[in-house]
Every structure is written in C-alpha cells, then in structure tokens.
Amino acid sequence: MGAAAVLIHLESNRIFELNATGARIWSMLEQGLDRDGICVRLREEFEAPGDDVEQTVDDLLADLSREGLIGA
Image (tube, rainbow, N blue to C red; front, side, top):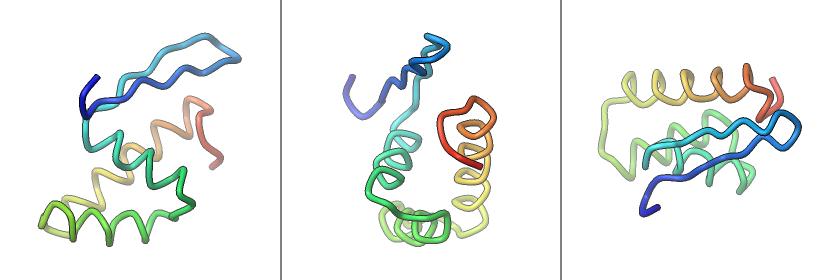
C-alpha cells in the first residue's frame, strides 16, 4: 500500500488504515520508541514544527489506545 499501512485488531476483526505519517509512527512504536522519541525523530525527518508533530503523535496514540491496539 505504498507508505500507508493497515492494522487488523485480531480480537475484534476491525481494520484500521494509517496514512504515511501514521505508518511511520507505528513503525517507531514497533522499534520501541516512546512518545518523546517518536516526536524527536519525526521533527527531524519531516522538518515540521514541534507543536504540529506532538499533536499528531498524541492524536494517533490516543486513537490506537482507545481501539486497544496499544497499551495506555
């Protein structure tokens, strides 16, 4: 799917599609990075303002947590 990713919650059989940024965040979660580490790396990779990066990361982590795809 190019830069996008699809997550399947095996317990609920729900499917979630992540855009390129979401897929990159998911990849960093798999690498063991925490929220702050993800924000630092995204700011470097995308040369984006810190507030924008932090909001994007926080929103996605909240969504993933709410859906039971990551721990709180």
